[in-house]
Amino acid sequence: MIDTIKNISAIIVLVGMFFGGYTYIDSRYAQKGEVEAQTKQTVTILEKFKTDMNKDRLEQNYINIINVERQYKALIIQHPSDKNLKQELKEIQIEKNEIKEKLDKIRGLK
Image (cartoon, rainbow, N blue to C red; front, side, top):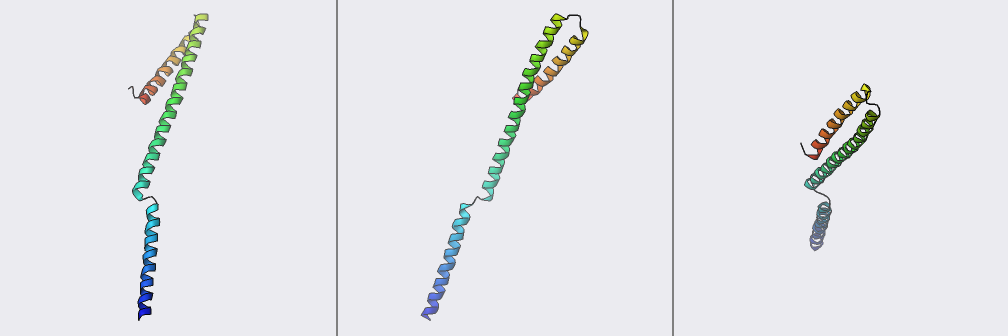
């Protein structure tokens, strides 16, 4: 009878140890809410990175088109009667304005 009580006590202690160990190990892993919060934070960071990359690309395009516009203006000064240069300059200025509008939209100015 005493051996049976000792065996039952040992089994209860052993089961308690397994349950306690499982609870300890389970508490060390991320909970579902923590994983969702981390996922949302990662998505937010990636979206900001994408926006920043688009902004950088548009800024570089804007700088490039300003340089092209200056070159065309210099060519028009050299060749004032060339209608093709004047037409191309107008197209470049339209494109420059479109890029500026997109850039202002990303910057939050419009």
